[in-house]
Image (cartoon, rainbow, N blue to C red; front, side):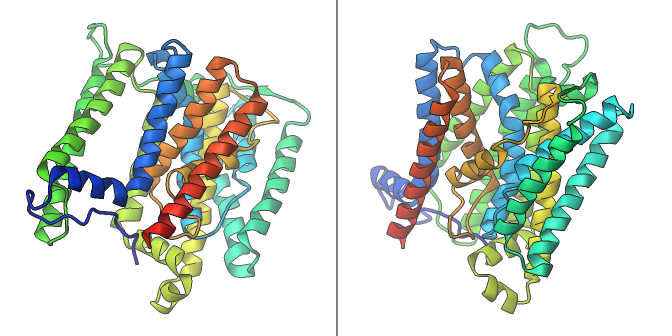
Length: 408
């Protein structure tokens, strides 16, 4: 009932297949995942060239992370919705509305941001519950329910800010969520952000340990694995990428709080999808909801959870976006859902449902936001930006459809 794990059809013992043939099989069986990374590298290399290295500077990488934060949070939630073969078109204006509520509570009601944040998250939960009940209990299709929600929350956003217009948020703690950085270890002045470097080292160790453990478990249960040289090369490459990014951030201001928030959300949802019964149910329902229901899965309850989860994440995205701008605006939420949906599909969510990973969705987010960031640096008109992102989106989905058909 879970997501089918893509692995190479390689024997356990290395040496039975030549390294070249193994690489060919590896690329062929995982071409969909590899194309995302290739596309991201090509995009980043192109903009680095076009901006004379400005794109890859530490300041811009940090800025890119902060810009991508709210989209990443939305896309993680959207991945769950799309795996279940539903859609949520309301999340953009739900995020905008929640951000406006947060701004009003802090500026007009004088409430602390640490009280406002849980209140706004509860509002997002209520919105998700409302839409989920319409879909699961009343039977209104998710497309219709959330399209109506898009109208409703766009109207509520405009009504909320009708008298005041844009609201400037002065709360430093709130604004730091999307503009601040984790503090360094006090008393150290080495010219770099030491805590960031330590976090990077720990991250590399955890990645290596987890991958080695996963490989041993596959061998233990007679699952196929890649050869030792390819496995080691992959670990070295991943570790190098992590440390390069960490070193760049350490030489600037360190890791942004946005990255911490997105990282926590990503870890929670990745664990839920891959290590829990609920995750298996989500994949099972997405693959065949009737079979899942006949197997005893409460399809309506799982679907309701997905919409509630999406509502909370939309509220969190609204908080991050408002903190990023340090203000609530009537245009907040415009096309947020499009970036989230595009990121999910570019990240490998199947158009037929049942397949998708939140970790890959983050790569999709980086593709979309790297395009936006790079074209902004180049001064490309917003109209052309939409065209380019649309072309990338349709190419990714078409490639996904064709590759899955050829794999059958």
